[in-house]
Image (cartoon, rainbow, N blue to C red; front, top):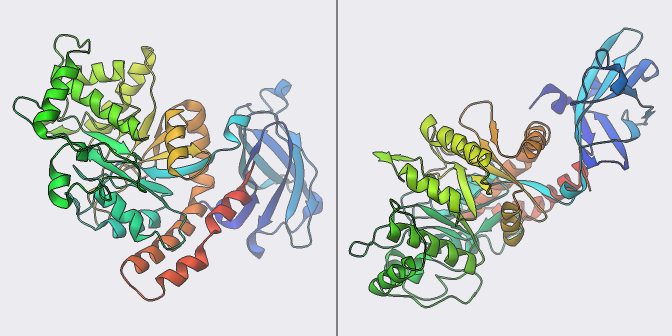
Amino acid sequence: MTNELHDYDVFPKVFRVGKPVTVTVKPLGDHAAFKKPEQTVLYILGLEDGKARDYPARGNDKTCPFVMQPDGSLTFTYTFPKEQMYFLRFNDFELHRRIVQLPVYAVDDDLCDRWPLIGDLHMHTCRSDGHQCPAVVCADYRRHGYDFFAITDHNRYYPSLEAIEQFRDVPIEFTIVPGEEVHMPRVGDGVNDVHIVNFGGKYSVNALVEGVQTEEVGKDEKFRAYQGAPCPPVRTQEEFYQEICAFAETLEIPAGIEKYAYACCVWEFEQIRAAGGLGIFAHPYWISDVYQVPESFTDYMLQSHPFDAFEVLGGESYYEQNGFQTQKYYQMRARGYDFPIVGSTDSHSCFNNENAYVASTMVFAKKNEREALISAVKEQYTVAIDGVSAEFRLVGDLRLSKYACFLLKEFFPLHDELCYEEGRAMKDYACGVEGGRETLEFLSGRMQKQREKYFSF
């Protein structure tokens, strides 16, 4: 957290372009007080408009009157003319020095009804090859600052339902979405090892075929479907194999691309969409001895994009995965191919794991709930966040990345403080520690109040 963010409370921080907004600047402590308001002047400067000294015709040195409030806060009303970050620069004109400079952001109409939410769309628990149980993973992710996520265990959908059920009876502002990492069984020469994530589907795609999930928990729909949603019957592996072989014959698949594997991918994505979910093409540059997916296969997938979103950032810290996936994404965009992107940890442990929080997604969604999150990703209101290094890196549309950069510095440190407290209480509740439920009830609603304070929509 920067000194300025620690010393001054500015609200709202985000507001609509072209409409008057009243902003409050409240010093947090006597050391930050405006002790001589009569010799203080407020300048408003657009970050993208150049220095007023060098580009005087642009007028990027507007002054604005303010009012000193009894509690020591300053308030002013101003109409910010275009979308960008602005600095509120307070100068002492007698001493010819800057007192403080504080950033705010004006956004166009399409972002005004969208909340910025941080999430993970791909990660694992001890129900497959992870280390912690679903409820503890939920709590630890919330503690780290996440607003939503999905447990996507290999071959298994039921762990995500377990997590949702664990917190069903307590008020939390953390959205747990059903999910799974889809792996169809190998049958004869039918092989497809492309990793695909079902984020938010209302039934299991893994459990459409006899395999790991049905062997562990059976075919009962309470383990295969979210909130009682209807789901298709379970196929035998041989029935599935014959279905994919027949489906492959209906597709125009170029020479050099494995027909069965590609047809299986398309089938999986279609099933995820039929379930109301988001189908994610995951980490093709993950090195499993060699690249998990042949590069020509990856190229064809990105050109035809039967998926809903591309996992441009994943859970490894070596450059070859996220670095090359990022370069591939921008290269494909330059060639005229465009598709939604996400970033996820693919974490297998949320504790003492250097890769536990290496990537995430900022989604600009109208609500923090399953359908709104999926819609926002499909509409390409996302930025992927690379957290491998101490200084974050962003992947995505430049306009959204500028906004996300501001939010990561000026809003999310405050947001994360509330998340940490709720995550601690969630872990107490999940582990049966006395007072967990009462603390969650006490904390309920604070996150929404914070958003409404800092975002004037």
